Every structure is written in structure tokens, then in C-alpha cells.
Amino acid sequence: MRGKTVVITGATSGIGLEAAVALAREGARVVLVGRNPGKTAAAVAEVRKRSGSATVESLLCDFSSLESIRKLAGDLRARCERIDVLVNNAGAVYPGGTLTGDRIESTFAVNHLGYFLLTNLLTDLLVKSAPARIVNVASVAHYRGTLDFRRSGLRAGLPADEGVRAIQAGQRALHARAGATALGQGRHGERAASGNGGHGHLERGSGLGPACPGHREDVHAVARGGSARIVYLASSPEVAATTGSYFEKDRPRKPARLAEDDALASRLWSESARLVGLDPVASRQPAS
Image (cartoon, rainbow, N blue to C red; front, side, top):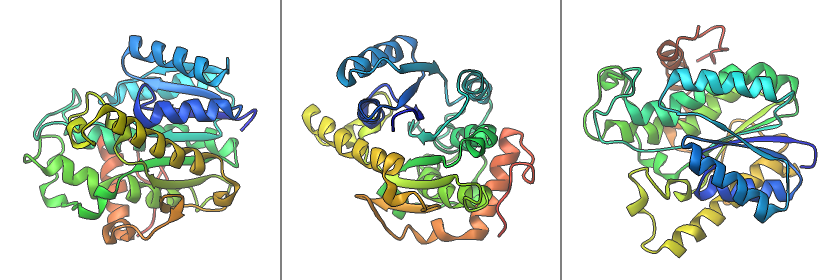
């Protein structure tokens, strides 16, 4: 990874932080993206200390704000001549009906639309940096998910569990498939994949912390295991030619049926583009 630039969102704790340490140790220039200035600065200091690398820096972004995501994309473009790996890892779960400042259901906004918008805004830079990789951190929870567009009142709030259900089936595994198609199946050398990272990135402040194993040591063990999955997808030559796939324990696995539905992916792409103010065609909408 020496000489490569890696951008990791949700990098102030859990698997994002552990992946940042590991990739910095391998020689990558690592850009940590966090929401809280104090936590982000502390994370940079920790990664530098544990990795022994000085090429660790940070940018701030609130993934519940489309304006903040657009600013992050601009900051990355100004700071990075290339991005070799984009790790979409930040995540949170909010109570049903919670809305962002953009009047979008918060869980869906942070866990899907944020990655959708950021990746689209950086697509030309990723293409320019080819062979580049996009790693979407997913969860086995997507096997239990549904995505019902008849109930997706995303600008008006959703029923109590709908945000969680939308994230489970609607985003990361499906987004990797749709994203790979949108990027032309890697015809320029860029690759998109999703991987099950467990819940290590949900260690604090996400609403899912209690769902992790009962002890803090267990949470750290989950984080270390999940970070290894990120590092594998970000750096291993074994997956260099892979795109649009879902991985568990460094092996491709058939995702949920809905995550293989090209018509659903196309519809999700169109709806996502509308919600973030992008043209579906200009954003390389995948064909159904």
C-alpha cells in the first residue's frame, strides 16, 4: 500500500479506526473522516502512534448533511491528487421517524445516501486513480432486510423499524452491485465491493452499541476482526479483478436475493439520485 491514498469514513472508532492503523502500517497515506473534531484529532494521533506513520490526516463530515458531504468531496479533491481506496464505513441507526436537516429519514440518509453522494462526487477522481477500489462495509443483517418503495416516505419520516429495514436490504451490498454497474463494471480499472465487517464500527453513539457482545474487550475483538476484512478488500491482490461482490471472512458469498435484483438496484439508484439532487443518467444510473 506504500504510496497509495486511502480514505476511510467513520474512522474515529471501531473497525474504521483499526483499519486505518493497519493500512497506515502498510505504508498507505490514510485520510480519516470523522464528525466530531476532538474525536477525529484524537484518532489521528492514535493511528500515527500505533502505526508509526506520519502520513495520517483527517477531514470532517457529518453524513446526515448533504451539504457537509459535498464539502467533504470538495476538500478531498483539493487535498488528494488521487484516491486509491475509498472505504465507506461510517454508520448509525436512529429511532424511527428521525429526520435529517434535509428532511430525509436519518438511518437511510447516513447509511446509504451519504455513500451514494460521496462516491458519485468522487467518481471521476477514482477513475483517474485506476486501479482504484471502493469498499462498502456491510452486515449480515442485510439478509433479513426489505426495501419497500411504497413505504419509503424518505422525506417525511418512516415507521418505527423502516429505517433499519431500509439499511439492511437497501444499501451496502446492493449499492456495491449498483455502483459496480454504474462504474462500467470496472472498465477503467476501478472496482466496487462490499464486505461484512460486523458491528465493530457501531461501538459508540450509534444506537447499536448494546447489540454488540456484552464486554468492551469483545467489542474490540469484533473491531479487529472487522478491520481485517476491510484491509483485505482494500489491499489484497486476490480481489484486484473483483467488482460488485459481497464478501464474508475474505470469501465471496451470495448476498440476499434483493441485493441481486438489478431492477431494484436501478430503482434505488434513481430514487437516491433524486433525493441528493443528482441526475440519474449523469450519475451513471445502472440499467435494469
